[in-house]
Image (cartoon, rainbow, N blue to C red):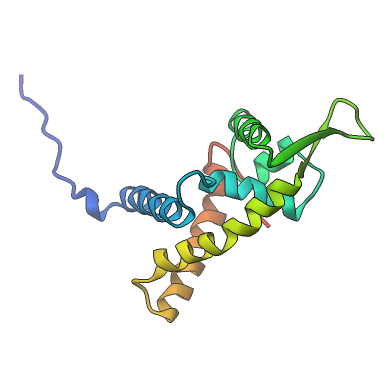
Length: 157
């Protein structure tokens, strides 16, 4: 019986591999910028969305940050345990919980934003200003057009 041999593929030329590597790099840069004991990129996203939309429910938060609801529940639990987020019963639906930043959460977010912005600059530093604009435009096309293929599609704004 003849053995089937796969054709060689250069993984460095595959978009999925490059995107995964860029994600690893961006998380590393973010964590370096924010420092020890700071927030993770996902926690930052949750804090920022809750700050932008006070009273948002957990399911809507999950759709806004493109996470499944169980993962979002863990993120919210950790943020609440750190004293940065609080759940309140919705006056319209006593089963629903609304999310709000605490004073400490507001302060943490305010302290994190400069480091987050610095990380974004560092991620894009190898590109010229015009390359950055093209890259971000192309990245948005890929994210928007492939959103429904995600395991946790976001509510794209």
